[in-house]
Image (tube, rainbow, N blue to C red; front, top):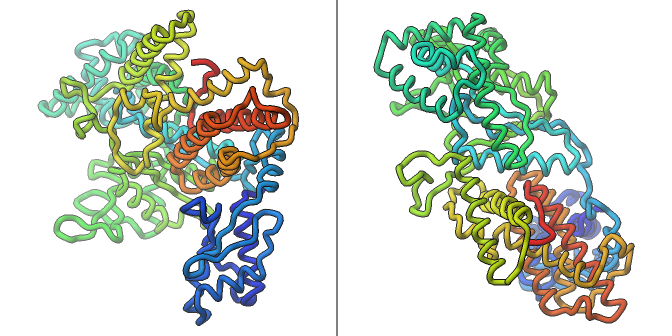
Length: 584
């Protein structure tokens, strides 16, 4: 099923050609949702943009287009407003037919991608021997939502966790543990993650202050790269210890990932340098092998190099990222590669993308996308930290959200004099707490910083997950009260009579347009905004239209609207990684 907007866009395009000739084929009709409902539902603004080219007044152009425009089965007669806006109002019978058509469709009328392709979403990416903290929240949640939406659209999505599991830090940590806690290098689970992090910090302090220890750590790196059995065994134990802790958080957030860390690409690094050398891009600079970049300069205004092999022969993040990019194109056969990281890494991605293009490694049909996001701030407007100034552990943040949700629910149950089992309370608190954190993040434009507030995100009013979960539960409350099984409603005719029914119907039919826009622009907040507005429009309908008390056939029609709203909320929230509740 094509979206209504797409259908109208095609019709206006055809009318432009019919009015002004084949030279105008492909002209964008600039069809957008109407800014004010009193003018209609959609508005074509193309007349203004054609005025200069045609040498005619915009209203005359709009009149010529409308004369050739056939939308009679979709809209009321088009109207021209102002300097040439073409206003289109959808017919009630069209809306009814569209809703009747999607009742039996599990995708609610959302078409799958016409040309599915292999897409990679690189997200989360914590570092081994370090705990996941608030800085990993956005990449993990945004990346998962993007992957879910692409999967729903039918793309073959590879979800990759590019963990930091290689390099100098392991030589440093292994060298330190050999001295102070050798059991950790030979025995599984000898340390918990907190102790491991503590030892990592101490090893870093030692490394920065002790030149002899620096050399010992470097030798451990050499042994690791050479595959020395004891060092390799120690490295595997440390990775496994961190991996188990990461998995606890991923399960809590319902995140699925394939781990493919930096170590995976280690055998490919020398080949990257060799091929860059063969292509004539490598320049030796102060002993390091570099590629000089266009558009990037240092403080002195000189061209900035991207180092791919350090003067000591070692490699860095850029080399690994180049190797992973080549592997993803050549072996994984990806057509779009999406990197979800903080905005501060924007230059890094622009730089290694440029090197890969200069080397001719990016085919014309492969798209590289950096999906940047802003910072999570505390209520003081500064980076979100604990009271002691430490970075907030992600596990603690999620536990706190669930704990506060639990307390809020207990208070509400007391006020309502409701009795519920402890299992019910725990499950609702967990779903609401985790959903609140996810939604608070996803509902922001990802490029902006946002202020983290437990009170705001757990509020039952406003643009929050609890608000939408409550609307979903309210609809299921209607089914319980009326002993209605929505699945048994069958394919009943929708009859739209009240103004709020029409408003809700129009909004239900915009789901495909919203999902299509997120698929392209990778901005999940657009889906959040849609679901919030849908929830508000349902509540207006619920407040003004009797449902269970209505006479037939209006009663069944309104129950179908309830069911379609609930299914749309459930589908939309599931694409954001949010679980729904039938009772709260």
